[in-house]
Amino acid sequence: MRKGHVYGTVLVDVETRRPIDLLPDREASTLAKWLAKRPGIEVVCRDRAPFFAEGATAGAPQAVQVADRWHLWHNLGEAAERCVADHRACLRGTAPEPPCPVEEPNAPTDSSGSPWPTGHRFADRTRANHAAVHALLAAGHSRRTIQCQLGMTYRTVKLLADATAPEDLFRGQWQGRPPCSMSTSPTWTIVGTKAAPTRGRHGRRSCRSATRAATSELAPTSAPSASRQIQSLRHRLHLARSPAGSSATPTPSPRGRTAPPQGRPVHCPELDALTGHVRSFAEILTERLGQRLPAWLDAVRNDNLPGLHSLAAGIDRDRDAVIAGLTLPWNSGVAEGHVNRIKMLKRQMFGRAGFPLLRKRVLLYR
Image (cartoon, rainbow, N blue to C red; front, side, top):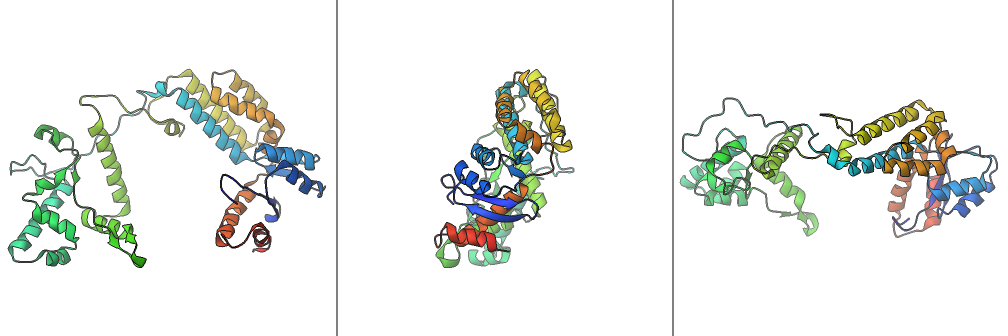
C-alpha cells in the first residue's frame, strides 16, 4: 500500500489463476491463521521471504512449499555480479578492442584552408544551413521569414545569422585543439542547436516539443539510424576522453561481464569457476534436476567465491522448498501478474478509499 513501508499479501489459486484473498500485511502470523482455516491446501508456491516461509510452515504443515524459480535465478545473478565485482582487476585488458570509426568513402577534401574537415554530414549540414540563411538575408528576407521557409526555430536562425563563418558554431570536443588532432578524431558538437522550450497546454513548459524541434533541425532521420549515431558519438567521446597515445581498453563493468561471454577470455580461476557454477545451475533449473542441488552447493563451497557462499547459505536455510521449486512444475508467476493488476486498481482509487474497498475490487474485478 506504501512502497518501502506498508505491504500486503495476495493469495492466488494456481490452478484457476484467480485471486482468493488479500491480507492487510505480510506477517507470518496473519498468513498462518489464514492457511489454518483451509486444511485442504497441498502446495504453497512462494518466494523466499522468511515471513512467508514461517507462515506456511505454521499454517499448512501438510503442504509442500515450492520456491519460485525466477527469484532463484535472480538471486544467483546478483551473487554472480558481486563475485565479478570482487575480481574486477582480473577484467582489465580483457575487454575487446573498440571498433574504429568507419570512414565514409570518397570524402571530399576541404580546399578552403579551414581546419574543420569536410565530408562529415553534420559539418556539411551546418555549412549548408549557414550559407542558406546568409543567402536569404542578402536577398532582403527577415529572420522570421527565413524561419518559416527553412523550418528552423528562431534561435537557430539567429545563431546561424550571427555567425560570421560556419566554423564559429563548431565547439566542444575540438575546441582549443591543433588542426592535426582535429582531423584524426572526428568528434565535435554544434552549439546552439537545441530548440528553446515552448509553452504547452495549461501553461506548462513542453520539453517534448523542444525535443521534436531539435530533432527535426539536426537529425531528420529514422529511429534506428539515430540510435546508431548516438552509439557512434558515445564511442568517439570515449576515445576523446582517453589519454593521448593510450592503448588501454576500458574495464567492463561487473553487470556487463555477467552477460553472455564476449571477446577474449578472462584468465582468472575464480571467474572460470563462477562461469561453471552458473551454467550448472542453469541446467538444473531448466531441466528441473532438483536432486543435483546438494552437489552444486558442495561444489560452490569448495571455491573462493564469497558471493556464492552467501547464496548457498540462504538456500540451505530453505533447501526443501528450493529443491521442490527446481523439481515440480509449480511456480508463483501467476501471483506476480496479479500484483501488477493490484497496482493499477490501487492507483485508480488513490486517496479515496482504503484496504477494504481495494480487497473487494481485486476479488470481484474481472
